[in-house]
Length: 71
Image 1 (tube, helix red, strand yellow):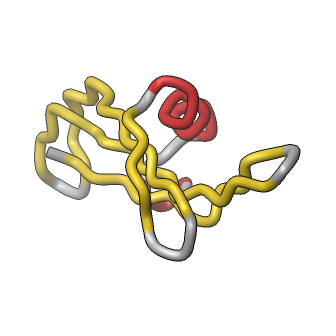
Image 2: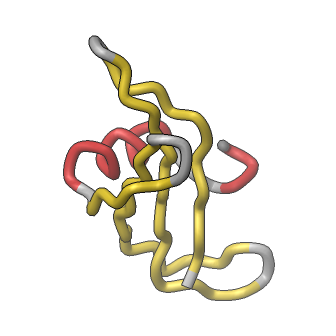
């Protein structure tokens, strides 16, 4: 996750307060945009979107993977 620029706190925020949408195989995708306004791989980006894919278990949510997009 760190090589993509995502932070654990951002993943938690995306799950708690982001938009939820259904994903394949009974999973959920959460999306949340964060103000970024920094360089990422040589280009200035204003927004970072963190999008974890989650499986819901009876007593917890399990993060399968995290996508990080820059705009």
